[in-house]
Amino acid sequence: MRYKIAPLTVDEERALLRAYQAGDVQALDKVIRATLGLVYQHALKFRKFQNTSVEDLVQEGSIGLITAAGKFDFRPVRFSTYAVYWIRAMIYKYVIDTHGPVRIGTTAAQRKVFFNLGRARKALRRIGL
Image (tube, rainbow, N blue to C red):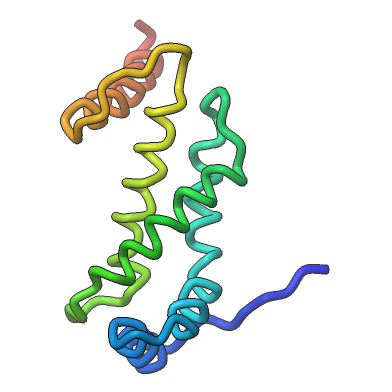
């Protein structure tokens, strides 16, 4: 049985995040449930890598979502916009840590090179090289 949780308004979102930062864990649960679709959407983009299941990617993205909730500083942006960075960062880290039989570097610069290499390959294929 599928269920859909309505997205939060800006005011609801901010009130729940303030409550979480004050110690209310149930407020975090409501924010995560409302934003989990965003995590799933980003996890689907990374399912092409070997040895990665969508469930694992969603789990790692959820960890990024929780990290974002703890670090959100109420800038004039929506929480989901802020959380995308953390969701993608945790998914990237997981993909790099589990991709291939040998663990490669996991610094931010090495992750950037790893994913830019894929973009460069696609660009070369497009032009026929």
